[in-house]
Image (cartoon, rainbow, N blue to C red; front, side, top):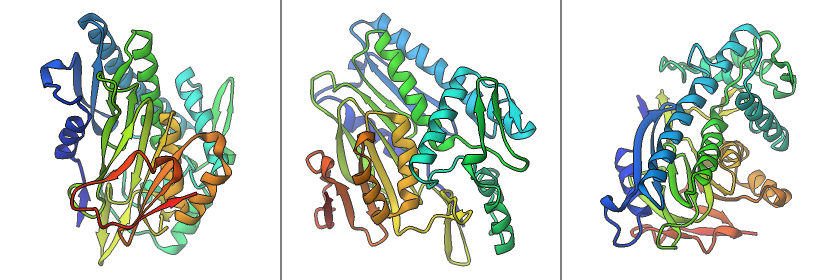
Length: 345
């Protein structure tokens, strides 16, 4: 059985949760729903006038497609595909900047995030939908090709050892969200909700009425929301095994690869949501923490206050754990009030 969840209903509910009380759809200055980076994105801007909202929206949509064309590992004409194919390539400023930041995150997380795990993603069939379970010998060979420290990046471009491939999917949407927020601010937009496929959301400022944005947290074991997070001038990134997976002989295999094993991560978690001022950090850290698991992930949070992030962990037994900075901004949804929630400090 193969499942890829595209939460159409969740997208709609997420938008409704984010609208100001009493706000009707016609009150939204400018909004666009597009398909990019293999997901449905909804960009909503509240401008002081229609012209600023229109310009911000048009500029934002164009930026999404521009970055997708540069960063996609599956688009044959992208810079990342060119690098993977030839082993070396000159890079545009955007691609070089994101690659540099991604390598820093790989180092900070001790390789729990590793952007060179793409050969393993391919081997498991997550790029084509032709799913398979590699044998142990193949996994060991794949593991030898996963090592972010072997990526060379300088002013001339980037180069890779033979057999290595990059995938910036764990950070690309977060980087894109940060770019869109910057463009919107340059247009004078102070309130916007940038939903890049539910797994990456950036709330620019507060809602027009001054209240926080309310974003639903998906129940990884069901079809609804188990809680709501309030955001204001923050981004939110979620990584979960429920988002894309296949089942074989009663075992579920998801797309989040543990670089240490070249296989889907088994950490006792169903999902991790990270909140931070940086969309890029949210994206990369949510993947890394999912691989680390609760204990290592919590220690990483304690050890890195300079990263300014908070995290919500959903465990395989359905219980939740959240870092102390989220205790006043997270609320369980109706029907989930009996869930155990541990506050980490």
